[in-house]
Amino acid sequence: MTIDASMRRPAAVALVIYGALTAVVGFFPTPVDRGAAPLIWRALAALHRRGVPDWFNYDFIEFGANIALFVPFGALAVFATGRRRVWLAVLAGAGASVVIELGQSLLLPARFPSALDVLANTIGTVIGAAIGYSALALRTPRHSHYGRPSP
Image (cartoon, rainbow, N blue to C red; front, side, top):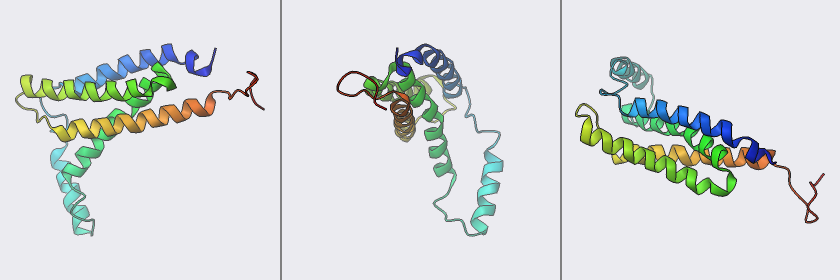
């Protein structure tokens, strides 16, 4: 059994748990940053006064947060499906993001669905999938053309 295969069940369990937590965040009735927004705005204003460029703004932070939210999803999905199905991990992350944004659009009037969120979430999934793929590639023994592990 390869390391790839031995990780699949625990990774699938972790992916289901992480996916459920992501769904809670995505389908929370109000924006999850609502309470923190005033603090973020004040911090950004202070940073801008100290020379941080204006492009480093609330939208930039939100885009980055959406990327970060889906990095673990991508890595866990690759661990659960294996390196050969990295495309499935990316497709699952993009699909989950589309479902969340559509759900916000149709069911949650206080939320702000966005195609940019889908893009950010998909970028996060791709980054996570690349990390997962690389981690598995580094841990999986290479075989010589005689079928034995290489030294």
